[in-house]
Image (cartoon, rainbow, N blue to C red; front, side, top):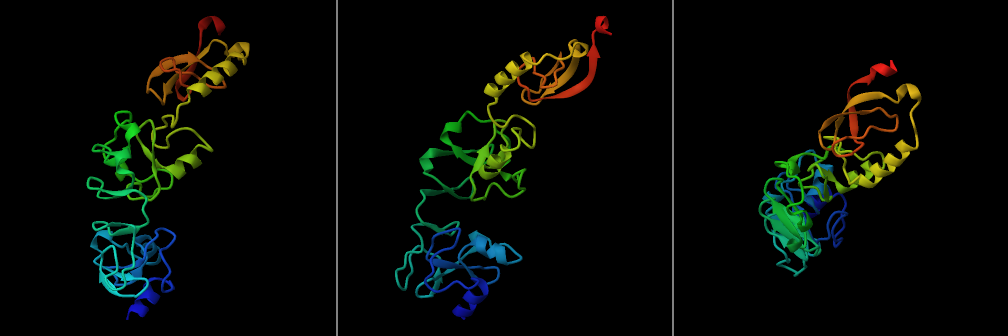
Length: 261
């Protein structure tokens, strides 16, 4: 029966093969939902039409002696170490990556624990250097990544906190910067653009508009400070009078002073 379960559930994994592309472990999880054996919940979810609830896992099978037993860190039959790290709540087996279980998050995180704190409002563990220095958004970690539309809270990919407080997967953030600089949710600048804005100041100063446009003004809304101002129109960009950002959008029609009409 054990061999049959491996054939059906583990998709051809051979005896003694340790771990999968996701985790380094010496056991297979017995899925409580379908009684099939998989190396991890991600492998299970990839091949099944339902998800494995990690918290309900009760039994595992040793990859060496094939004994099915209660979930634990070491095989009771042959002493195979199932994982350098083992969480009895999440049933996470893996090599040591300084993991720790966060009771508030409800899952295990990669540490070291002392380098992180749990933000109760964002509902997420963040790096200590962000303590008191990030914008909190209620339960922001429970929102999907706005780029790939996949879960952030339980993702194995590190979350990147934007200045506006929204979260993206780190990989999604890096891809986004290849094409733009604004948060896909609120359009706030996703990184410090001060240096680029000052370069744009120089370009604007060196690129005078034709005489018929020199006294043209336009109302703008700043995506960074949310302020409104009336500024001189320029094809290269229109700078916010409040915070000096060029991350702005037109919020009204053009106007030309009467002596220029």
